[in-house]
Image (cartoon, rainbow, N blue to C red; front, side, top):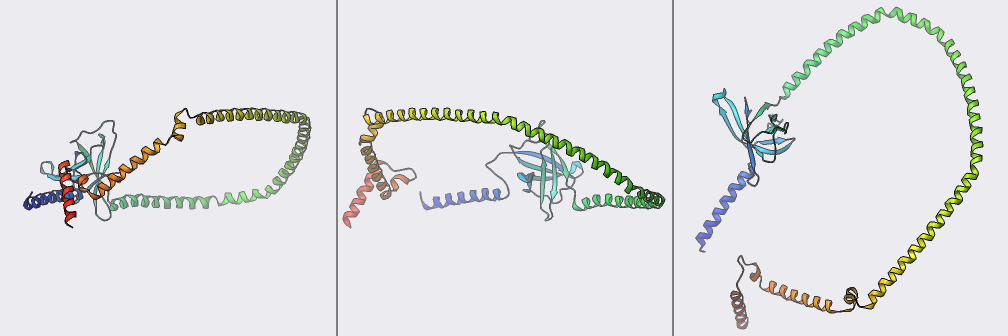
Amino acid sequence: MNKEVKVGLFMTIALVLLYFGFNYLKGIDFLSSTNKYYAIYDNVDQLAVSNPVLVNGYAVGRVSYIKIVQEKENKVLVELDIDSDIILGDSATAILNSDFLGSKSILLNIGDKSKPHEPGDTILAEAARGIFDVFTETAQPVANNVQTTLRKLNTVLDNLAINSARLDTLFMKFKYTPGLVNRALITTDEKMNELSSSFKQTSDNLSVTLRDLRPVISNFKTFSDSLKQIELNMTLAKAQETLGNLNNTLSKLNSGDNTVSKLMTDDSLYVNLNKLLLNLDTLANHFDSNPKHFLAPLGKSKKRIERDRRKEAEENKQN
């Protein structure tokens, strides 16, 4: 292959990589499949091709084409490339959104996926409300609430003036409150004395009951000690049985008539492993000395390898 062909091939590959890289930076992913959907807006507010399509803040596609449809009162048709694994319901909406820095995007609402859209369908288009619209809608209820509050305050002041006489009557009745409180305290003191007597009687009955339960508690402790002794004897018996089995296993290993004992006493495994390591070391030295024999694009035949070896031997003799 001459130099001109190599240069032409290199330039072709560079141009192809430049094309794919430029489109990748624009948001076109050639390795993933997409479906096309459409949305029609009255005004796209400087939306541009390659602006992202977002679902819950995650990019699932991009704007691939924008066109004015003069047959429909100059409305704007927007083509959306959306990942093929995203399923849109028939109630899906494409909301045109703009942040404080002026960046445009399409906020996609998936909708009910029980009745999915087919690729190529038109999605319901909406425009996000601007910040001034939000302020206007918020300020109107606040103004209405202030007017309502002022009317209620006037009503309260009128009622307060009317009820001043009732407050005087209420303060007069407060004179009789201390006597009522004293009678209530006397009644409460009597009830507390009765409750104290009942509590003392209950405490005496509980002491008698605990005294009667002492023999039962002592018998239960004796029974518990017996159970612990039985469990200890069973544990010792199982330990002795395990030690016997272990002794039998060790005696079989020492007998030399099984695979494990042969691996422990026979050195053939060590000899074979040593030969394998020597062969691997030879192969590694050959790879280090002649990497072209292994790493050439299409490999080398046996004849070319022998020719290279003879050529190297002749060069060594001349040196």
